[in-house]
Amino acid sequence: MATKTILVKLKHVTKKKHKQFMEEQAVYASCVNHCVERLLNGEKLSSKDVSFPLKSAIKNEGIRRAKKAVSDFKKGIAKTIPVFRNSLNIKINNQNWNTVDKNGRWYIAFTSNQGKKALPVVETKDVQSYFPFLTSHTREFRGTVELFRKGRRWYVAIPIQVSSDLDLGNNHPSVTKPLTDYTSIGVDLGLRHLVVLSEPTSGKRQFFSGKEVGYKRRHFRSLRRSLGKKKAQRAMERVGQKESRWMKDYNRKLAQDIVTFAQQFERPMIKLEQLENIRKTCRSMKRADKTIHSWAFYQLKQCIKERAATFNIPVVDIDPYQTSQTCFACKHAERSNRNREAFHCKNCGHKAHADLNASRNIATSTNLAAS
Image 1: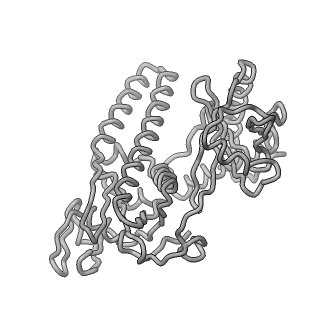
Image 2: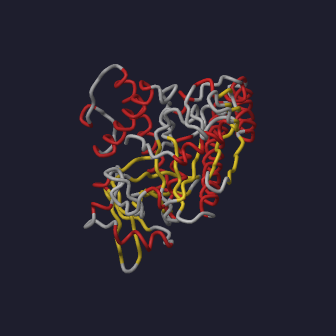
Image 3: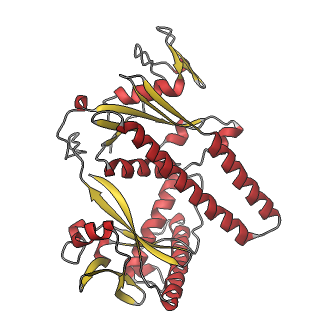
């Protein structure tokens, strides 16, 4: 199963409701920050231990988010623990929301400080397709949603499980074909080149440089530094939000290009390296690399999976062990085979672009990453 996220816009949000949601967002963010501090001190928390004016279900989601932030920091996945802002998305678990059909119109009901109320939504094709499966009688189809705003507009992000024709054993129970029945597209993710795609049989490849990303990140960093000297905190926050929006939009477009590349082949399958430790494997400390070292790789991976799911293209995670050190021609693996962007096999003499060689190894690999 793949997951796609649909954005549902709330309709006719009154000034009173808008103010209520904003206040609840601020309290929720304070709750998460408070929980982070206590978890770092070794405390074990439950909703009864957290004295914030929020429903227990919302407090529990805040505790989970705080635990994830602390866990990522301790495991080295995140360099720092973020300070959550007042605009933080509010998470609502599957027991505390559902869809409602009133006189042929769709509403979404979810728990808030004012109780559980049903609000009308802007009816789109996604709403008409999925809302009938998300009512109070069908809890097994509902996941955790997020309430967030863009300016004065409020949205609910709803995860939807989308079936795929792929089956790779216990980790992918819907697979019906062996790997050899698919055309494998290798996707190598890195810093100098954000993405290198390849299909080894045809020899087709595509490179996506990290130069634009590096330029943009340096630009935003320079703006923040300048505003920091002026102590313009609100302006710095606006720049940070603008950068986050740009990153998300860039990742969506990049995911679209990757899927478009895959669509030119018959029965395509996209193979990605497992990304959890990508920053540990990308150790270059050049200044150009530092500017994109904090790139949202996980977000990019999710965008690829969501985009591919709409075309029923399977996406699998491949064990990244030695994919960048192994020769695609003779399969000899040695660290000295790779020197920055150049790959030169010490065994057979094969030469290639290092990232292209890695993407070809990913495409032909059958070593699935552990879930």
